[in-house]
Amino acid sequence: MRRLQARGVRATAGGPRGTLALRTLCALLVVAQGRGAAVSDGTPPVSIWPLPESLSVNSACSANETLSLHGAQLSVQIRSGDQQAAGDYVRKAWRLAQQDWSVNSAAMAMTGASGPAVQVVVRDASCATPACYTTATNESYSLSISKQGGVQIEAQTLIGVSHAFSSLASLASADADVSCLPIQVVDRPRFPHRGLLLDTARNWFSVEDIKKKVIDPMHLTKMNVLKWHVYDSQSQPLEVRWWPALWQPYSRQQVYTVDQAKEVIDYAFHRGIRILPEFDMPGHTDIFAKADPSMVACSGFLPWDGLGWDVGTWCNQPPAGQIRPENVSVMTRLLEEWMEVFPNSVVSTGADEWNANCWAERIVPKNSSEYPQFWADSLEKLKAFQVEVAATVAGAQRQWAVYDESFVDWKLNGTDALPKGTILFVWEYEDQMPAMTAAGYDVVAMPYKHWYLDCGLGTKDKDNWCAPLKDWKNMYQYDPLANFTGRDPSRVLGGEAAMWSEMVRPVILDYILWPRAAAMAERLWSPADATKSAEAARPRLERLVAQLELRGLRPSPLDFPNFKYFLLPQWCDTAPPQPDSEGVDYCAPAKLYADVDLSVFDNLVGPI
Image (cartoon, rainbow, N blue to C red; front, top):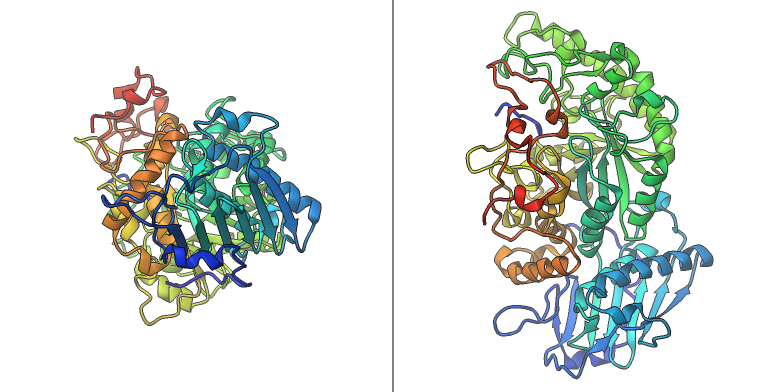
């Protein structure tokens, strides 16, 4: 399990590729399918991360062939759809994009400046709200840049325009100049789900941090799904209006109001990203005992791992506690309220690390004669719980998503507790993805062995459960279709990196995320035959790191250093001892940094 602390197929793009105004100049260009031109030392003079399907640049790369974006003049043509809403989207996305290439340029802020034309054509703008942005959305675009013609963008949808702005930002220097002209890009993603999970429960991150350290770099690397793991047993920071007692943040400063959640959703949408909310249940719900202790089974039971992993546990990580099966109506009512806040077409309820012992409030040893019947009876309770949750999600006309235990461990496939068409987030059983898709389920790969960003975030003396660290090469080299040779991969939606936040504090969030998540992003966007070599990608990734630094972020070096402390959820800062069955206190490492200012970067990161 992800928290065991005790130890190329293409997305259907559809539509024409678009007309590129500079097509007649192709004879003058070096044309690379998914590759940028490179200088003699292997460093590309211009590049786009992730690699586009087709990138053509001037091989001479003359300094005379440079276009300044200072004072760029935007014009928008909407061929179909809501003219006003679509025009507003493009203009807001453009304003956000300008901050990506004006990092060293005070002139970009000057009024009255007249610069090159930026002409945007959108063929179908019928989707201009987050609610209709799905895996079926066409994300293709074309981008042409020349000294004479300025910037020309054509996209099937508004999301394609956002991706074109991202590519323009990649091509621009810190002084808002684009060189090696003329440039032509024709592009579309390999997979429609290129995600990042952010856990805001173990440790909390401000709205500003989520925008600048998570969403902005996601936009630059064309990741398009932020899965927001809102709450967990340690804290519940999202406002609840139906029953305010269910709002249980670490403090009244560490919260997300409904308005703030909507602000994040809107900001992300204008950066080409949809927010997929995750409300884990029935496990990971001890926090609701603070509202009403009777709602939660085995709340705070110690030792938290019961009689040990081989015999029977209460939970996979303290504090123990999960919502009782008879209180499923509380969770479905909460779901109904929050689905009105989050318009995304997919809602995840996790359903991972459910614990039968916790519901029974007694441990039945796995090797006992009683265990088979106990397990069967417990599964029936779980099925009934999941049927209610599935019906609630379906009633809101959303697609349901859960983790792969429901298919493999709980064996709910083919029942109303796991309806066909559900999305399975596959973090543990990647080898069974073909069986899942053959059974009628969509899958998103997020294998902990490759794409868990928290793995290995220990110190030189202490590692966490899924060590070693998944470095950028490990993340780059994994392909979600690795087990699909000779099999139909059409239900593989893509993949997701997971930022479980136990070992993360806000000051190092961007450091842990980037550029490792970007390595996965290219694997999911770019043509499969263009992403076979991690070493070939290194010079471009180093260029991306430099771009992120210019934008005020602190990405990690490619050779990841150690941390000075074994960080834990903020909950451990004040929690009583949490001994396991061997007497080891889960929260003990927090004592080592009790007097350390965790908002200072150098207090946390060790020497490289």
